[in-house]
Image (tube, rainbow, N blue to C red):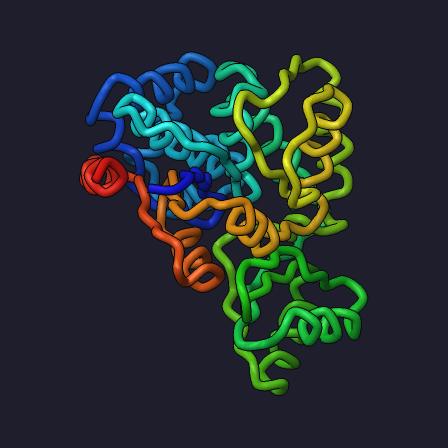
Length: 307
């Protein structure tokens, strides 16, 4: 077995009932939900019993997905599976920050709740949405976006897939341009134009909030959304990365390729859904991939990784 990387799921992967069997599978996962309920009562019930509509609200999505992400990682750790590095996609980076020791569990959960509130508020002020553009080169997507004043390429997911964010009417127009260029555009299940200038206010609020939060050097390599490089050890650099990833693009493909170049062969998606697993397979076809989101996938991943 080569080096293992945990990849923490992002917003859009949420679904009703997520995390329940994981919580019931052992004390390590349950402790994550218990802590969340002490700080934000009802979080576990929202994960397990919330409706699709309720979970799609950013103020709910982010705390809930964070809990499932972190619970999955802690459940693996309790089984003796320790990663050699971690990375999180967008929201998932906050869970990765907690798992790697940059934030305490309490501060990590409080910060994700603040992040959700700031981004929800920005969405209410600016509107906007997102779509995944498929079958076009990155350069083509960038060129199409430049033809629209308020649409931006924001998530470089894998070869032939870039997510774009922007004002809804312009986003609709861009989707027609994508189709005319031979591509395909798929609306995303998120409530705002994330990782774009539409989130500038939220990023400023995050930077201000982080002045009150203690951070620590990562205890294991942590790859940043903002730079596609390892998180720095010093406080100022850590806080800059956390705040700026809110309103800057996520170079996910570059992060995966960097991990590959540094000898990582086994990638474990921790958290709801299988989006990141698919992105790894499309970017690094030779990589070994598994995921953990419930008791069943936990058992399968432990068996695979210990083989």
